[in-house]
Image (cartoon, helix red, strand yellow):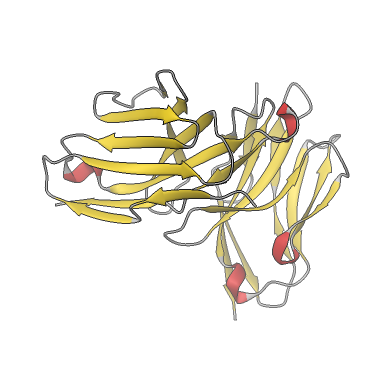
Length: 119
Length: 112
């Protein structure tokens, strides 16, 4: 089946530094990718929708200057957490929308997630 | 408008007994419906999906779900729980294939 690769799986950084997380669709082209944040024992919180070749659409309350999203190709989207602070520590997950045969058969494939710890 | 309601935030079953995780949805059109499983510190894995074909959908690891339009439900079941089934389960609905709406998740505990 389709595979989405997310890297790094775990990153620890100092406060004030920036961290980039990559999300790649390995065997299909993903026009749309999604970025989520997940707190312990909670559901996924959609942060933004990343569209190839255009600006990302951010959910209400998500700072676009803090969480930079770039979707430069049909197989790669990146999330950069800028000037990270301890409160940014979280589990970040990406997903890519596989188009399917018709728009009604599209489904999401998820990366394995990236755990960010900011000291 | 689309929405998904997972009626139980936590379900606990004994090993070898049936599992029922409930999901109700609202959708203006014919939706696609999915169940995903998430083990700790992992991404989400697709268990099964309904996309307007057979209403009883069989997935991986012995799970299945039945789409009931009259009840707007897509409950997930498994005849016999295994310890490895302990995880978080998410019900997801999509109309367009580009927007996906998640339930709040159900945490399944399997008691030995």
